[in-house]
Image (cartoon, rainbow, N blue to C red; front, side, top):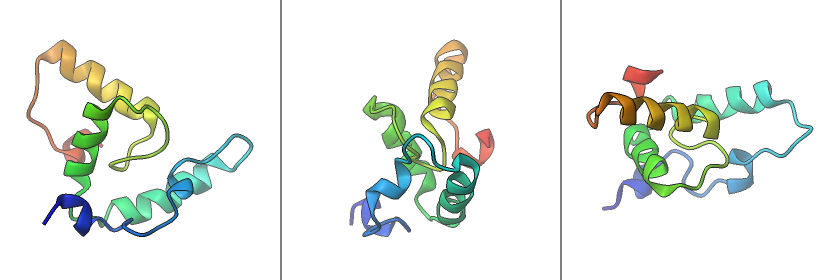
Length: 88
């Protein structure tokens, strides 16, 4: 079984995770985090997102900006071992 099959967001409208301009971003983020924070594959999702270079939307419980910061920190530190809940 692929990790995506276990994702809490499986089957949800992907547009929910790619909010457009003019939306209440904090409300959207809270709704997304409610899903991601109980997802059993949050780490796999974030790792996939960091390797994907698709820098839009929320993945692995992180916004594109947050993922860029994580990737930058990992690059500076040479750290390849981490977990989402360690960087939250």
